[in-house]
Amino acid sequence: MADPAAVAARHTHKRCPDCDQVLPASAFYRRPNGYLSAYCKPHQRQRGRAWHARHRPPGQRRRAPATGADRNRLPAAPLLAAVQRYAQQRHLTLKELLGPQLDVAFDHAQAAGTISLTTLERFCDEVLGWHPRMLYGDAYDHAAFQADSQPSPFS
Image 1 (cartoon, one colour):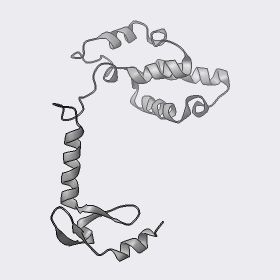
Image 2 (cartoon, one colour):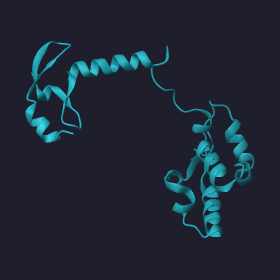
Image 3 (cartoon, helix red, strand yellow):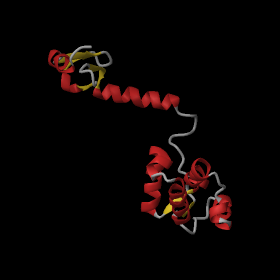
């Protein structure tokens, strides 16, 4: 593989196939390997936008905001306490019990004081082996089955 610094020093100008002009290297994006992008910056952005427009589902411009279980939240305290008790019973640290992804989610829930239903269900399935209703009772049912137009009382 070529040295990126040597490649960068070698390329001072390049022709953009779209505008058919020889432009300085600063008019092109530089790849990690030192080579310049095929098209100048404006044409590279234009081609990127066109690609995204072709690969979006018809009629959908952007992702819709979260609804349902992603938006509804419950207090995190019962789950955090249950996970900590479970780790102590197993003589494991939280990092050992949860793994890297759930450890980050645990920290986020601890900082926010609330937890989304999807994250709650993942903790219950993967760590505790319980149904979330065992921790939250009717509050879980209310959050899981409430209409999307109604905000959660815990958010």
